[in-house]
Image 1 (tube, rainbow over the protein chains, first blue to last red):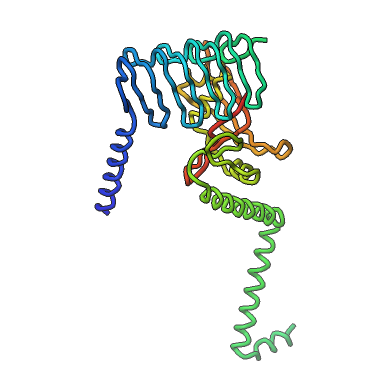
Image 2: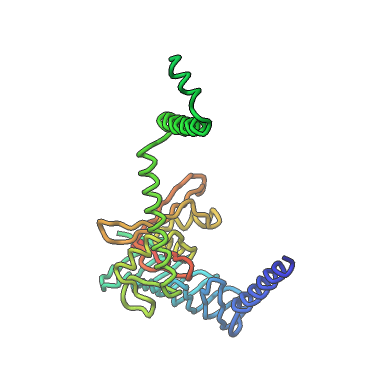
Length: 125
Length: 181
């Protein structure tokens, strides 16, 4: 029984260490400069960092297929950027506080497009 | 009466014992019959058990199928390097899936600012998730409900859309992309 408990604890420790090693700043400078950060769920950000925040140009890739390429401000999607949805749809345009805000074009995977003003992720008719 | 009493007395001991045993068995059967009529659910219970057995059999079949799928992202659309589900597999995976991970919810929240706000204010808490196969539309729908107090107002928002991709962990499957646009 003691051996089993020891084995479970040891395995947990090894798994935690392996997990910790595979996350965090993997390349470059993630404080001030250009670097690649890997999150625990395998989301990655590769781009510019200012004062440990995502700031400037960068690419954030989510494990479920969302990819944002563009400007970041204070770690949020802000400025000009393009979001690729997992099914191939895209939104290209202005962003603010992590949402589609401003002028932009949404293109569905079948090619249909909608261009106009967006506010907090909603198209303004 | 007297004659039958006497004839019973004349019976041998093993025959009397056998008769007693048969009598007890009949009494037990009668007792259960009466109790079953009073408290039992009869055909209704049998029908319920059959439905439950069918559900268990269906679940086993789905679990076997899920464990045979490759680990990773499973999609129902073209144009990616991920494993493409056939129509039959898409339906089966949909019916077997119950979980929706955080990234899928965050993705769907892009197009629902109110849901995003409540989700953030409440520390990423989700009230309810659902994954349903729609027989009429032949599509899988998934969603979630968030509720909470947003700037003094109690709000409940339900987000729903087509579940177009799944994550297979080798043990279970999870909705990975909800297309709510």
